[in-house]
Image 1: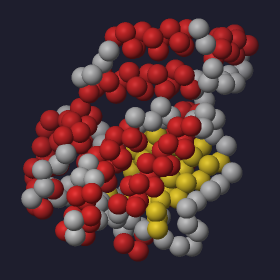
Image 2 (image 1 turned 135 degrees about the vertical axis):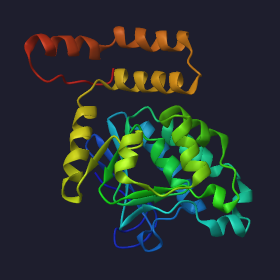
Image 3 (image 1 turned 30 degrees about the vertical axis):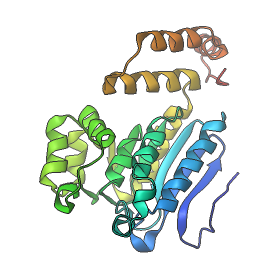
Image 4 (image 1 turned 90 degrees about the vertical axis):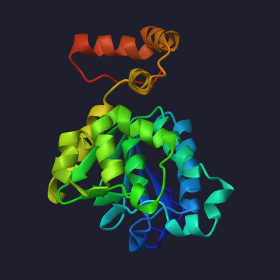
Length: 262
């Protein structure tokens, strides 16, 4: 099944396509390097809600059309006052992506800049493409980045890497991004799809309750908001699940498990 807000031949808000257990969200303004407008952020939030409501979806892939993944938030929306209608719209959108129970992968088709670096970091995994680069120009623009994004960079990459990206505003190469942990995989252009498919296959093969529960618990631990009682509740839910019974049966019978998410 596939649906999209605009035709594939046009440009506009992000496109959502659903193929079996895999959902793919594609940024859709290649002519303008996939810069993010207010309407794009609202569309992303709507797509996240739809994905969360469909239990058969096991993996979300975030990617983009064109030669650049994303040039960040449209600065015109900052200068013309559009952002004042909801000054935390970007932050809320990135947080909504991170809070999805379904595992998420950012598949880069090119370089990433500005706030889009945080949008990608909110995904659970990132597959990079050789030749891409990253730059966070907040300090050069006079912007103090929002707290949630700063916390995400520190918790996932460490303080040194976060200071390098935000304070120095350096252009960082793909190899350096892999070394600092921003990228989980780095592949040549002709091998990116295979690297992505390998991750999708691994995630789709896992039990949804276990993956979603552990994803939430790990993110809470990393963010310093871990609640032992909540983690115990997730543990107990999985212990009483049909998925656990199926997983044990499949292991004994040496066959792939058929998880239902229940």
